[in-house]
Structures are given as structure tokens and as C-alpha cells.
Length: 354
Image (cartoon, rainbow, N blue to C red):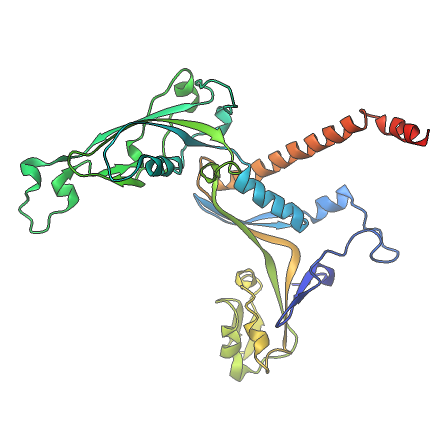
């Protein structure tokens, strides 16, 4: 692919160069690089590369690293979700301490739409609009004949009843309008093992789930991971000897290099170039180091996001954009207030001059 050299971060055997963006006013003589909305819209591209039920890989092209990183951090720490926050223990005779079990309960991803819930602020009382209630009441017991079995090596399922506390044992107690608004509420995965029990051991708890953000606690983070990397750019500058084609191919990630045995040619597969990790192994070979140029495209970000919340993977970026817009609006309002409102800037300048 043909890429403007100004967009490239050059990668050498031991170092990288041209890391910072140079397209800003005053850097290039007789070139106007002041920010322009129309130009930004033309260069901005969002392209979904892979989408599954719980994860997404998409390309964000045409933005600065600060913007891409802001989206990543917002997805991790500021997109709100619902998680168990208060645990009231009435009985816990398992080997798991109350505090540890409460922590494990808090990390269970809940399938609850955060937009349907309000945030419980400090000093507020729990209501059906800001709090969800779950209950656990489980006791382990022997099966018939106190665990005796005809099998020489009986399994736990053959010997015990309720020998595992699972996330599916959380029982939602709807209150007020919750049943009408939420329909259902519970764990995304009902098979998460929270504790193992033996006959005579029991758990009885009341759990309160609340709306929060990942910056307060990781249990409110809507993602398991949210990462990005720059798109690789690989250019073969000199023909590769066909006798060493396989060695050249092994210097890159699988699928990046195409070897045509009939035509005896070696090429870079543009469709799979994105998969390369840019290990720079090719630059350590004396014969190959002058035959290839490695770089990354500075404003082409490959995002990989795994959702562990009620949000679908494709919803997380729009949610992050909405939160960023709110932040920008708040900053603008604060700046206008400092200036005394619209037109206040002139008054401030006049006061300084007097």
C-alpha cells in the first residue's frame, strides 16, 4: 500500500524514529496544517475487521494517538456498568472467608442495562431505580446413602447435592418498576464457580448491585481487555533470492509473506500484513536487512476489545465517544464561566489593560 511517509514511524534494528506527528502549523514552510473539520472528516475512518458475540477488532484511522488512547481509557474506566457492591452475610460456613467471597461476587459480570439504572450517590437511600437486590440461599447435603456409590471412584455430583456455589445461584428479587424495565437480571455466565461446599456447609447472603465506573473499582469495568496497536507497514526494497524465500517468510508472522513457487516470487500479502508483530527479526539477518523497510502507520490504530458486560462489543466505542463529548462540553462550559460567559473574554482583557 502507498502511504504518505509523514504518517510512518520508522523502525530500525535497535530503535524507532519519527515517532511524533509533524503535521501541525509552522512545521512545514508554506503549508497550512491548522485543524480543519472538513479535512478531518475526509481522513477519519472506522472499519470493523472482526466481530463476535463478546469481542471486536476494528480499525480507527485518521486520529492522533492522544484521541485513540482517550477512547481506550474511557472504555476501560469510565463506561458505567452494574456490579455487586454491598454483600450482607447471614451465614457462611464454607472455607472461603466472607471478604474473599464478597470480592468474588463483585467480579461477576451482570447482564443489566446500565442506562436503565441511576447512580447511587453518597448519602442517597437505595431505591428500585439505583439498586438491584440478589439473594443466595444454598446448603450442601449428601445424596442417598450418604455418598455411597457403586462406582469405585464416585464423582462429586454422585455424592453431594449443591457441592458448588455457582453464579447461577444468584436469585434476583425485583422491586418497584424493575421487572417492567429490566425484564431479567442476572449473571452473564451462570457457571462461574464461587465456592465449593461439603455436607453441612451453607451460604445465605443478600447482595446489592449498583451502577459504577471502572476507575473506582475494576469490577465495574465493561471490558476484559481494550488494547490497540499501530498498523504495520512492510516494503520490500530489493528482490529476495528465491532460494532463501522460506527463511525470509519465517521472519514475519504467519501469512504476511506470500511465496509463489511457480513464478518464483516473494511478496508481502497486503491483506494479512496487519497480523505482523514487527519483531524486526528480518533486520538482524545481514542478507535481508537492506532489502526491506519496516514501519508503522502513526494514525492507523487496530483496536481489540473484549466485552464482559451487558454492552455488545460494537456498543463500547459509541459509548466512549458520548462520554468524551460530555467531557468536552464540561470543559467548554468551565472555560466560558472563567471568562464570564460569552463575550466575557473582551471584558477580561480590558480589565487587564486598565
